[in-house]
Length: 435
Image (cartoon, rainbow, N blue to C red):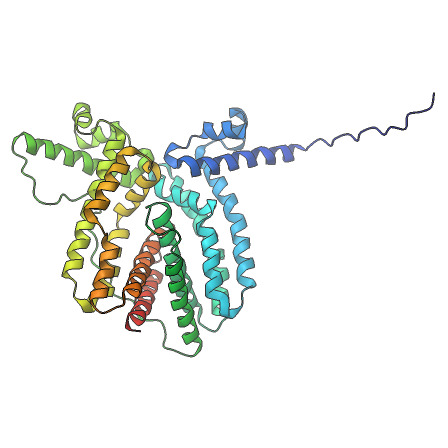
């Protein structure tokens, strides 16, 4: 019999233990990111991540023993590729395109899974779990080389590093404000394309003027008075607590103040009925009488915060003189976005944005305060003589600048730099209004 000429199949190489470990880890990290995107942090469960990755609970525990370890590892892995991309994009950019390309890089980053997940964590993870601190440290450590790549490139075009940093933070803060408004707050306008072009145009012109030897950065404006919402939600108007209606209103106030404080300190994920009962002194029956479900309670807190904010804005809009409109827009935005209550509202929108109770409250608030503070400030600018289209662009520029700085501050506050950025934004807005 002739020997067979058929070649035997090559034996498949067995994967090493390290390769198997890396594959399992990668599956868990991907599942974690996907679940955080779909459900938010408050509804994330480590067992769900293991199930989606098709990894046993024992295998999951072997790789990541706690939820904190798993989430931090997932975010850190996403950041690694972002740093390299920033350095590559900045290095290949020409001087005349540096602002436009920096904006493009930011747009890609701010619409990425990484940004969505990390923002979700910074807003929603309660301080009690120390998870927000870990995410904040990862974000801060990664932000340094990302921003440094672009600051270095902008400075190479002929300005100081201080000026380059202010330009970059202003640009990215405006973009951050746009993205948060659209993705979380549900703001109008699909992509803010015209508004972004307006901001890029202002900063490109400013950078060109700096190369020609214009004066240094403007001095920082005085900070506006702090908001009064730090430790609770003020009640609008005095409440008569005599009689049944008064006692009922007093109980609601206790419940809502306590719920707000818990959410401010522990996040939506840390909100429990037992905590509200214990800290407010209201009985379980009293809590359920006023707010039968957690969704209704959270929606009521959201409504109370927004009511106070919008009423404060209406007072400022009515009391501001024409000559002070630009600075008043910034002060109003700072009172709104720099306050603890803004983080609470973002947390509510991330965790409960699809709940019917909150949707009804948001619709009612939109109708109650239409057309909204930002649009009403733009109308004030128009009344002062600024053309309509430009008035809306300038208002959006300043409004989103402050909002973006507030979100940036969730990672790390840099007071001096923030004030310098706001001063630059006001200077550019003033030039645009006068042109």
